[in-house]
Image (cartoon, rainbow, N blue to C red; front, side):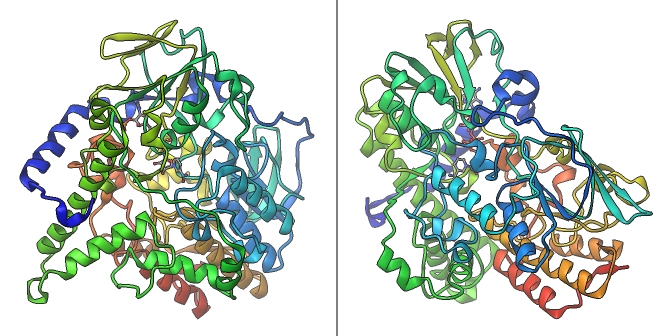
Length: 599
Ligand code: NDP
């Protein structure tokens, strides 16, 4: 599979990519999906922990945070480190973890290296056991952060925020929940996750299926047997199982399910690109050697730097992500300096991508015994059109007896019957249907979170955003004092290692809160001018990834519909992620907090 051996007919490849994309375009785009919560309430319940009865809470906290995932944990930890004890995290799940609370499907593991993905490793002294840690270890790490920083004390679990309103007289936020709570907080953070609302394909007959069905984020071990820790799913031994979807989740849970099910049929609309994972245990001696003070930040910045303008001398993480970045860079540097035009650079990028994807396709053909199945597992699009996947057992799972791929050639499953799944005009009878169909991404913030914050003068966040999201640094909004949004868009927008965005915002929040508390200030919010200036600055940069309609449809490009007016500011710092992290670091350290108005 040496890259030199590859001969690529670029024009033919581009035609093939376009043909494959066209098969998948649908008029209903994102509307093809339905919500797990609304349509199938029995499928949305928490299979992991029972809901505890408790009295409504009516007190006051300094900082309330919506979401008990990485965002809330990082912010909570930084606030505690800064000396603020009255911090409350609120989460729909029964414990901390966010996405890692819900996603306990077999085989779940981080797809970015643990050393940079798992937050606060240095602060907690935890050494990840593997280069890519499995979900139970990550969930345990969330609990570790919660315990170490005393975040359990005020936390509210199995609780959904239903209302958030600014009280101008009291200069406080009033928070209401579905458990009857009504309490106040001086500051509020929102880290509700970009992908936390599970979705199902809106298939005809989906409610009529008489067997068992669940979404991967509600894996029912009572039905399958086994545990998230890897105990055998022995109850599947006499079951015919269908998995619908072949995205990053399916790539991880198919190999495990294939080991135990009597029959497993995987229904594919678009194959994922599945490159080498090369997971390995982390050696204690090696870890002791690298874990000097400041190591995790150094590692995170080194990883992030591979996706920026410069060329880092060393590659600490050294994996499929950085390999991709290095190949692109290498190709670009082949262009003579006097010919550096945006077009030439994009062509060099494209060449690196063609080569990489050809290798990945050859990998599928080489690892899958049945040539037809191997061919069907080849991904015909550029690698960053969809979440790149890495796995060393997924493709091989299709060599097991009893495991079958139903490739629908872009058309997807047609419908569900009482007995099973219909695809390519044929009914497949099964006992269990597992939906690996993903999560809502670019739907309205208020519809995903279940509340619409009401800021100064009764203005709703949805009205403030109107046509498009508006923030300073992706973190604060004009008219919404002391409210922080902890996510990536309009900041670093760094999706290859999402937690890097979160831990950095946590640093900023802690700096702002510390400044306000030491100066005796009541409110902070960006001025309207500062917010607009930041948005104008974002527009000066690279193109909006959502506009890439040449890509196969998916949540990266609004299911092929491309950029809508409301997405126009779904951007990151024009200089790239590292440029944002440098900018915000200087902004924090200056102590001036330029663009914020304090009172
Ligand atoms: P995705 O949205 O990536 O995948 C959903 C899958 O369902 C796609 O393969 C989609 O096909 C398929 N699908 C939808 N409707 C139909 C239909 N009617 N018939 C057949 N197939 C259908 O969801 P995932 O849960 O896999 O991943 C979501 C994101 O979560 C990832 O992109 C990644 O960011 C994150 N993730 C991270 C992990 C980690 O860090 N370890 C692991 C897993 C996920 P099509 O492609 O054609 O739309």
